[in-house]
Length: 71
Image (cartoon, rainbow, N blue to C red; front, side, top):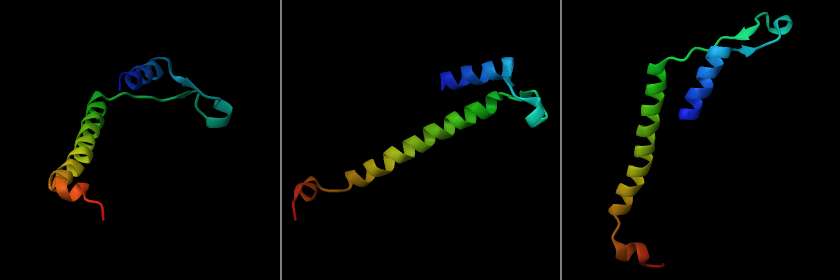
């Protein structure tokens, strides 16, 4: 998360040079919006929580004897 922020800030400050004869622009425009950065971080945390809590809930519903039994 921190490395992405630093790299994006550097790209915004220094720009990413491009060949203007090929792309018709000399720099790739980069804009860092802190609110979008925060929303993506929060969404990532929520998805990770859901991905861990759902299987844990399902595993808690199984009796240990049934889980250890080999059929």
